Each structure stands twice: as C-alpha cells, then as structure tokens.
Length: 221
Image (cartoon, rainbow, N blue to C red; front, side, top):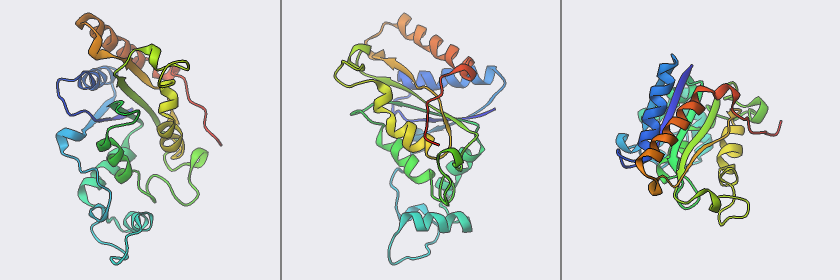
C-alpha cells in the first residue's frame, strides 16, 4: 500500500508533527510505502489562481475549472501542482494531518486541496461519489483540537468532530469517490502530560495497524 500524509502544522515540535512521524513509522513497519507532503516545510503556495498553470486556454479571463480541464489534457499544470497531483494519484491511502483552527482546517491545507484536486484529474465528466475519479482509494483525517472531548459533542459548544469535518468527508473524500474512513481525533494534547501524549500516539499507531476494520462513513450513491 502507498500512503500519502499531507501534514499541515507550522511547528516541527508540535503534537501534529509527532502524529505524522508516528504514522510514518507505523505504516512503514507494516511494509507500506509512505510519502509525506509537509506543506509548511515545503513552503507550499496555497493560492489557487493563474499560477496553477504553465499556459492558459483563455488568458483574458480566468475560469478555474475550464483551465484545469485544459491543463489535465495538455499536461499544463505548474510543477508544484503537478508534483502533488502525482502523489495523490499514486497513493492508496490519503491521510490529512492537521489541527482544527476556527472549526476548520489551516488555510495552507485548504489551498493544497483547491490546487491539487483539479477538475479533470480528481473529478469531472460525471465522475463523482460512487463513480468518482478517485474511487478505490481510502482517505482519513487525523487531527487535534484544542478543547476537551466534552465540548466536541452533541451537547457541547462545537458539536461532534465528524459534523465539523462534514465538508471534507462528504465534499472532498466522498465526492471524488474515495472511501472515507472515520477520523482519528486527539482532544486537547496541549493540556496533557507527556505520558498521556505518548499514550495517544500509541493509540494512533494501533488505529493505523487496524485500518481494515475502521468504520467507513456512508456516502450517497
């Protein structure tokens, strides 16, 4: 299996970084190939505009989907976009590793999605959900939140994490045909002692070791 971990945290000593490192170690120990796109370290440009393309079909007026289709047909994506598209298309498992900020993902990760999940490559031509262009691949979110479990619940301030992640699970993974796996969430690692942090990393490793039994999120046909 080939796994792509898209890591989106600016601090190399963060708990998110520890999760990415542990995921890589665990998956490699199981014989899998692991590639990491560390977006902040790469200096990945999150802005989706004309710089996505080597040339444009219509330089006078930018229509992103039309230009993505043109670039898909003509191998016309900018090198940084094409490199990430190649990684995405080559993987069997996609892991998005990030902290929840303002009930959403970091802007750099949203920009990666905007630029890499291009029309003609990740979707288009009636290819969506059960007929999606990326069907056969699995995808999951691995993330941290700042607060304790109680505030991320049906009776808490912010609702369940799966509700917060609905745009990713349904609008990204499901829409492009990927099998969406249940997310792995660590609640308030900044509030934990070192022993508790290590226990959470061990729990993450066990989760990755048994992905074949992970809950699959239902999607429309």
